[in-house]
Length: 250
Image (cartoon, rainbow, N blue to C red; front, side):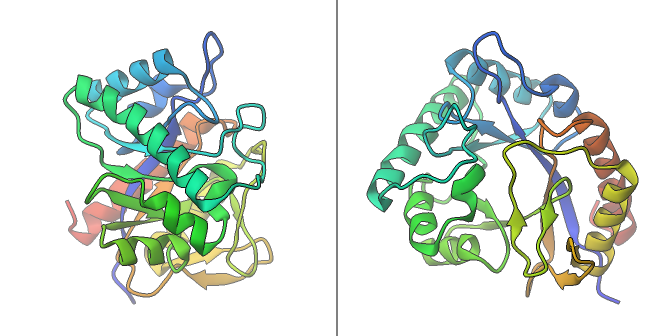
């Protein structure tokens, strides 16, 4: 049997706006390793971004940028016709905003991860948008897709990601929804165990797909706007810690 995957837990954070709050950032930040911080175009604003980066620092959580299409009304989860050069500029703008707050708190940019519908667009757009990442910063995305291809072509580290609270089609496509449905904790545990132990992704049709060739490490995402997000993240973190320890990674 293959060695268990080395794993971390990540979460999309700072997705409130003004006086509105989405997700329990304080509860989640105590559980995760990596925070993907919204940069203002699907959620967040300058005050929320500042607070989220400060919260990450106080919890020793690594911070990455989570840029999206300019779609506050649709939370960045609707498709949009946009040219590759526009998308590149859009991402440079957002990543630069977050980088300013990271500098304020003396933190490095750990990675960049596209948000929502742009996460599953074609090779060209992903390649152009990922070029907005600061030199040498890792690119987070789905293994065996345009994400990994873009990282390899740019010569930047690639962080393979898998989602504990979303479904996958029988073809291995991530099924992104505008609003996330609740996921039973036991289903999450089964999915995570299957991934870590056997390197398999469970699909809606009951298939078991390989996560990808030559993938030895994965970051597991728990969304802050999924109902019961803190409990899900805690369950995932417990399984990750147990697996990493048993495999000798820590």
